[in-house]
Image 1: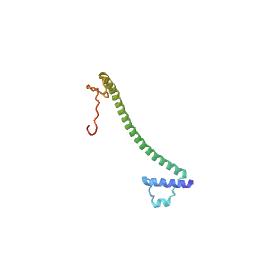
Image 2: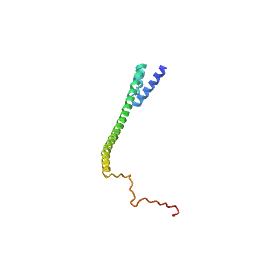
Image 3: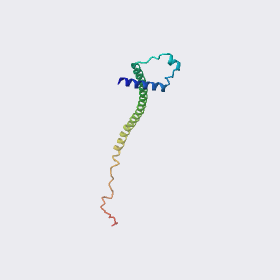
Image 4: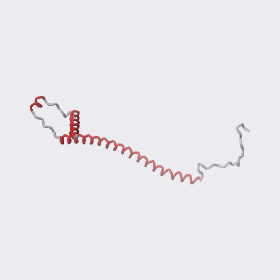
Length: 126
């Protein structure tokens, strides 16, 4: 189980190095004449951990930037709402004071000066 994990991590590490251009092919004489030290399982795991941490940090920075942009937009909207609220706070007392001086509200009806009218007109005009 651990060996499979180490092999998977090693493969992942090599793929990352190839993509990053870190892994270079050695000349044939170099590989034949010198012994290349093998990395231990722990070293491979630590390298993979470092690579994963770097990738997660980059993703985190991107997400923090997105959240900061959202926070700026929300702050702007809250400021706009506060300004609107202050405008309404000044307009409401003005409307209330103007309606108290005339004592007539727009919803009050005016009485007919000719008195009550009792008439019914049918659909056919009679």
